[in-house]
Image 1 (tube, protein in one colour):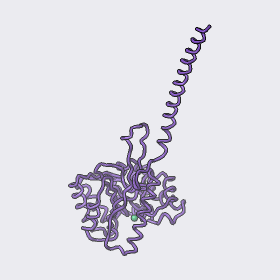
Image 2 (cartoon, rainbow, N blue to C red; image 1 turned 45 degrees about the vertical axis):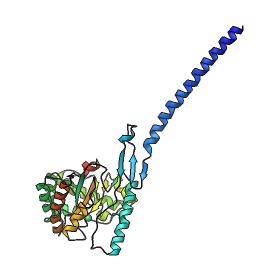
Image 3 (spheres, rainbow, N blue to C red; image 1 turned 90 degrees about the vertical axis):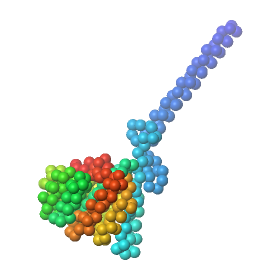
Image 4 (cartoon, rainbow, N blue to C red; image 1 turned 135 degrees about the vertical axis):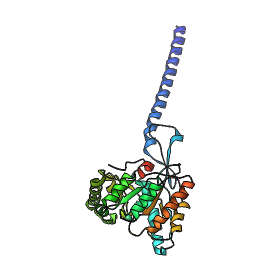
Length: 305
Ligand SMILES: [Zn+2]
């Protein structure tokens, strides 16, 4: 009788111990499962300009993509105090908006490699755009052009050449209005009319837009995103729209350049100074070890729909 009590005690102790281990294993497994999705949901903010996005399908911390939104740089001594103050406010607002819309609004690319994008707004025309195309071709590099619909209609051959040379033909609206002052249906009309003009020439519809004047707010970003557009601004402004000094335009780029930079220049009307500055910018950046890519390549997004 005594022996059987001892035996029962031993057996129950073993059963209890096995049960305890089982519960522990169950809890450990469940913890791993529940941690994974929550880890992928929330970007982890490491400093004011950096958002670290956990990469999908991997738990390895070293593989995280660091998305740093750059402060927007470039100066001009032609701006009044008030214009400069307004520009500074716009720049800090844009950086905050970009951090909130990290997959749809871009001011720069996220890379450690020495890659930059040259971007040209307000063309096509018959003077500056062909000059830019020649300079790019001579240097064997490609760039991204944000064209205005009503000028596309006037100069289809320039658009065709831009595309045939391997550059991107993207949307800068139809008539260059301030997007934040338009209703959604008017923004859609601006986008659609520009798409149609581009499609007639290159049989492609752009999927990247640059709102005129960089005029954008949270509501507008939502509208553009709904129309299947990524919105791309810039991280260096050459301020070639404000100043005609070649050296200032060059220095705005070469003194500020960071990997993943998106550089803003213009090709419309009298932009001779910009086209004088362009070969110098290209040569100096090449000397510094930079290569030139198009926006789809830098941002890993589609250029066309
Ligand atoms: Zn413009």
